[in-house]
Image: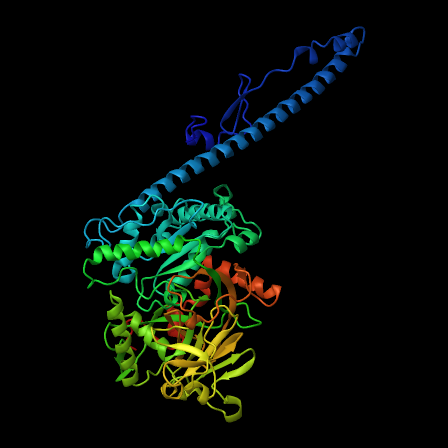
Length: 638
């Protein structure tokens, strides 16, 4: 069979004229393409048995008795042969399966080695600008047992390609070249032996190394604000169990992951955010800077200065003195009593420029396309519906290469929204939006007593961190006298198990006064949209925007509560005035969150569905969903 074990062509092994129990005339037997020689039983046990011969003497019926006994011994002989053949067949099957496993493992190891070689190569080749950190940039020498083991997931396109330059520096350092990954390559390399497998192996090594020190490993998330939740997704994807690959170490430990619950609690990596985006709110609030290390092209001798800043940044990440604290992660879940969300997600599309909305019958209307990745589940930083979400959706069509031009683009899109009429696919401002927190009405305020609607407000949502867009902060709601005075107000906290809900309109900037938004601490929120056919609402999470709607035109709900506690690393620029106390009195650990075991299990199931791609099927709209919902699909005119 096309098989090195027998040398018989495939047609001979599988042909219809061949039986698995074919016995050859020469005393050999072929079982599953393995030739077995069968020894004949000792002659004295059959015809030449002295006992048999003695019994036949003087017995006139001896011939009959002898024939019967020969038949009996022949039957025994066949049973012995069948037993031997079955035993040999089973033995061969075991040996062949082991050979196959060894062959697969050798192939896997070879694929891993090739993937590592690719990882060590310059991703951009030779046709690119010189590295901004120069040719002699180095990173701090990693000393095992002294420094905290790290990995990195870095977006090479972020920070005006600063991510590519940092990866280039890492490739020349023995320790870092094995542990610092292009996050896009990890996403693309999910095949067996691909980059995800290499990341998984290195994560396991880092876990063991850190455990020996009584610490937990750290993962650098390098990119914009959305990269934090994306890095979490990649970590969970790497830890997802796959019982078809037990030999590769992906056996389920009983919780859907390859690490036990205890290993997750003790060794889930702490996140350190490398600022490579436009706003970098996540990195800034954790103390890792508002710009990428060494950003400052107008500094004299800036290559050397940039290299020095990068060295210092990595030195702080691997330092055991850098503090690790808890961080709340929030999640978009189905409404209580449901097992799936009742809305679909699409993305705004159109031409780049001041306004992406094409004119149809004299009106500017939204054009939508299928929702893409990432699918919203984790909310790390903030969530909102309304003005800011629509602005973010338009910005995504006009993204630039540098942080400063991106900030200008945000302003241009904001001014455009204010100047333009509202597209018919959106209700005026926040009409149709209602939010309950902890089962009580929150937005619009006084909607029960005075039947108020959302048209008077521009945006509603929550903060998990006390920093948005370089400018906006939050503090607990207080009387005007306290807001105007010097009295302290509790800032937004990222590890107090509470959302910091907000709502604002342009006059709020006068009432606050300024950009310190009043907030209300809540345990959860549920947004209800009073839908009409052909209408929906934009929302954004961590700087990513989507358009939510119901294909049937029915009301839909977006429910958010805390889902995880994860450890994060604080950097040297952490400002306690912004965060308030960061040690919340609880041990630093990873954990699924729920007020009941059932709620914890809901988070586990949702998380596994997310990394398994099932949330894409549930949430992302198809072309039919969009057109059936009464919207224009990408490129359609009517």
